[in-house]
Every structure is written in C-alpha cells, then in structure tokens.
Image (cartoon, rainbow, N blue to C red; front, top):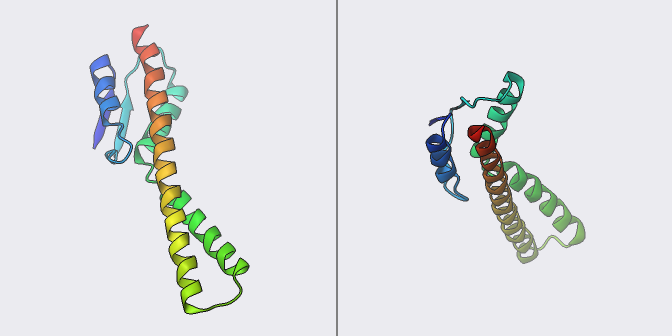
Length: 122
C-alpha cells in the first residue's frame, strides 16, 4: 500500500488506518507537508513507515529466547511434562510481548500522526 500525506483529508485517512491489530503494510509513504525541511521529512517518513509496518515479531523473538533459556536454566530436570510447560509458557509470554509491541507502535504512530496536524495547519 502507498500513502501520501499532504492534506487534512489524507492525514485523517492515515489516522483511520492506524489500527492496533490490523494495520496495512506500507510499501511507500510520502509526506507532502509544507513547513518540513527535507532531512526532517525523510526521517519522519522513515519513522512512520517503520511504525506502520511494525509487527511485534522482533520483541516476540527476543522474549521467546530469553524465556526458554531462563525456563530451562531454572528448571534443571528435563522431564517431558516440565519441558512442555516451559515451552508453552515461553510461547505465551512471547505472544504477550508481541501484543505489547503492537500496542506500543499503535500509540506511537497515533502520536506522530497527531503531531503532523500542526504542520498542516500552518
């Protein structure tokens, strides 16, 4: 999906797409906002694109590895039931980390898009 933000209507549409669990994947995002210098515009485009495309997988993977290592380090008996509890618990914690990451990026994207209204009003 491609998004262009250069008017209040386009910004409102981008804000509408900022869903917690169902954000679209952006291939490109163009800011046509007056009052933004070129370096700031490029940084903001990059940040907005990153926030739109954030899926939470990075944090989920990190938490999964930490939970597995910690679980097996703290539970030295490698029995079948104990190992399954560690694996299933690690998956649950990892899924929670993914949801927290998605929510965090949703909030950050909302703040960034709201800040753009100031530039459009000038």
